[in-house]
Image (cartoon, rainbow over all chains, first blue to last red; front, side, top):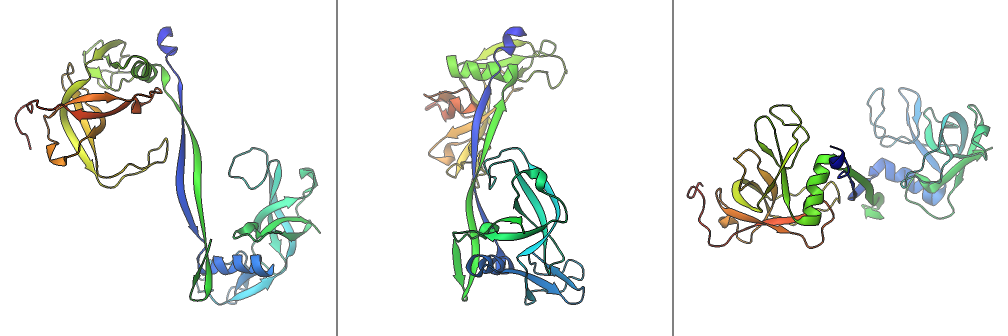
Length: 151
Length: 169
């Protein structure tokens, strides 16, 4: 059996999967406003008195259509939660360690997830005021906002 | 990236996900693959209790649940037991590549097994009407072998050999 164990080895493989993500009508309008106008848009359900950022096509509570219920929210807000990413994976937007934060923008009722740059991760605290820093170059993703920083 | 549709831009993100894979052979598959790579030998292991072959080998006999310790070299020729013609290819889990369709997968009873260890691999054939149960086939080894099941490139039909058991289709 010892001899057989010496036969064990590892085969390396690499899987490449072509992948397409469609932001959809609502998501596209959100991204285009971020990229071209540096404006953060949400949708508001008047019935439930809730503003959703990022926007969605229908209200999560009453299911009514929110297709033409655009509102602009502030580019600053409050940190409602965060975690510190310490492991590295090639798909990550940034070298770890970094802070991935939940930010409730002024005028919004739901938080969005984004990178918080605050120097040392120990500087992050729930309730702190943060503002969006937009990307220098135009980007077709949520990274049209480069990151958030302390206000 | 963006696409204009009725005056409104729709965002599409096209990416290629790259996923590293590590397949650990373990001692038994390791021996099978090392023999393929180094010696072009097809090794089946054998149950000490019921005597059946397992190909590809596994550590324990699937029937008797005892450790399968014996090894037999099998000849690289056999008979098609069954086959599939594939017209819709799914990606290879190790590379993500898809094969050109249609292609043929066959289950082969190598000579020396008693129909208890069908071996599964590609069959290279230009004419699909030649694929039948009972057709005699042989292994074609890859030139560049790395200790993987692709070290067998495919099976091919042995020309001018009679179909075993007559034309079963």
